[in-house]
Every structure is written in structure tokens, then in C-alpha cells.
Length: 284
Image (tube, rainbow, N blue to C red):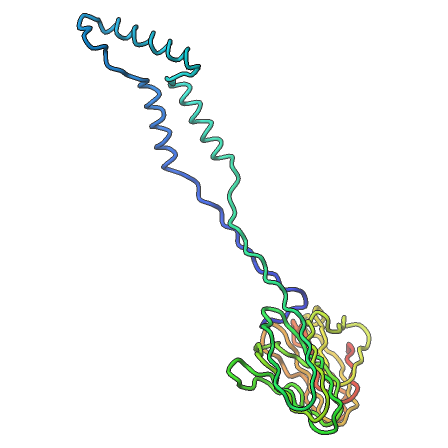
């Protein structure tokens, strides 16, 4: 079930980047070995009588002169190599764990409005993850019928079916997303798609009163056993669906006037009311 009373928010999973394990140990050992060996060159050509000590001394002198002239040192001692490797290890361990980039949340769908006269089909922009209800009016004298239609042209639900003038709020995509709306009417009509978060709310205290078809947010009211008293003074059908985490429960379905007590299912978020008269809800 996709109904929420606040903008929905995606769960962001954070995955830590893996650290260099065995490879770091191998690289450190190689650096230590190179530092201990130093730099080795061949003796000068033609100097067969030079002793190893003289050759080593001459090589050291040449290295010192070269290092002095260039301002750099060509050799690395084992201690210096170890310090450098340790510093590199500490730097790698101290660096913060990398986090993957999180895709931005999709922009909320914009409200949509339509108007016309007589029978017509209107195409809807994609609704995304947002939940809407439709505020509908009709000023004709004959029947107005409003269907939600899927992308294959099949009817999903009969949202409105009244005679003459009409003004009410009906659930739009509480379940399946429609791709279009099909209207049959003899007069002028308007349809405004409104974010569910803008629907009226009841906090479970006192008496809430409305008239005709409506949508009412009751988030936080139904916790465990929650009896409520409902009344209706109309002449036609009076039905109420309680929407929660699953498909809706039909908690009232009667004709004409009604005065009774029932239970709101635990976790109910929204009430969808079909009525032709004034109706009320209050705690029992």
C-alpha cells in the first residue's frame, strides 16, 4: 500500500568502501627490501687493480658529489623507508570511509486541473510516488460518471456516479495509478488533483462534520481498539473505507440515515467516505 500523510522519503543504504588488506602488506615489504639494498653500480671499466673497498669508496664519493650537485638524495636508509611506510599506513587507516553517491529523490508530481463540458477523456501526467485525491464538481441536470482508466484503456474504478449537481472529493490513486480519466456528463465539470497531505484531518477528539463524498486523514487515531461513532442524514448510500497498510476495510455500508458505532482498524491512515448528506465522526 503506498498511502502516506507526509512526503515520502527513500531509505538510504550506506556501504563502506573496502580497505586494502594483503596488498598493503606486500607493498610495505617490497619498500623495506629496496631501502636495505641501496643503489649498486658496476666498477669503472679498465680499473682491474681496484680493490672492492676502493671501488666502494669511489662509488660513495661519486654518489655524494652527485647528490650535492643536484640537491637530492638518491639512496634511502632502512629506517627512513620504514618511517615512510608506517606514515603511509597510518594515512590510509585514518582516511574516512567513502560513501557512495545517493541518487536525489524524485521531484514531487505537480497537481493537475481539468475542466470541460459533456463527455470527455483526459490524459494524466505520471503521478510517481505521490498520492492524490480528486476534487470534482458538476453543474448538469443528468448523470455524471467518472472512471479512472489504466494505460491499456481498461476501467480501474468508478469514482463518481451521481445525478445532477455534484461536489465532492474522491480517492484517485490510493491503489493503482490511473493513466487517464473518463468523464460522462451533460453539464460543465471540473477536476482538480490535490496532494493527499492537503486533505482535512481529524485528531480523534471532538466531532468532525462534513458533507458528501470526502477524504479524511486520521493518521495516529487508530491505535489498538478504537471505537468511533458515525452518523449520516442523507437518503442514498453511506459507505466508509478505512485505508491502512493494506487494502481498505469497508467499515460502514448502509442506505439513508445512519447512527452507529464501529471500530477503526488498527493503523488506519485515511477514511474514504461516500455520502450524499451530512455525516459526522466522533470518539465513542
